[in-house]
Length: 66
Image 1 (tube, rainbow, N blue to C red):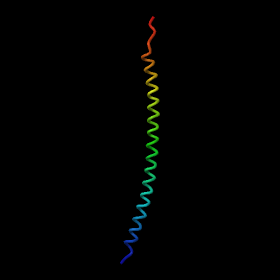
Image 2 (cartoon, one colour; image 1 turned 60 degrees about the vertical axis):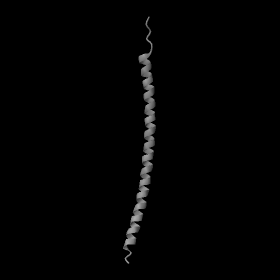
Image 3 (cartoon, rainbow, N blue to C red; image 1 turned 90 degrees about the vertical axis):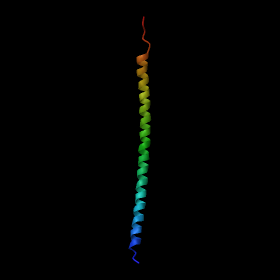
């Protein structure tokens, strides 16, 4: 029997291991980016709420009519 199929199987196994490692790294990076995006969305949501409150107070504040 030729040992060439064993060599190919070993190469495939090494390639799978490297691919798994790279996919794990990518998953970590995507997770970090997703968390940053969530934090930024919450921050901008808070800023928008404060701005809307200030605008609402200015628009609907009772005007003094004498």
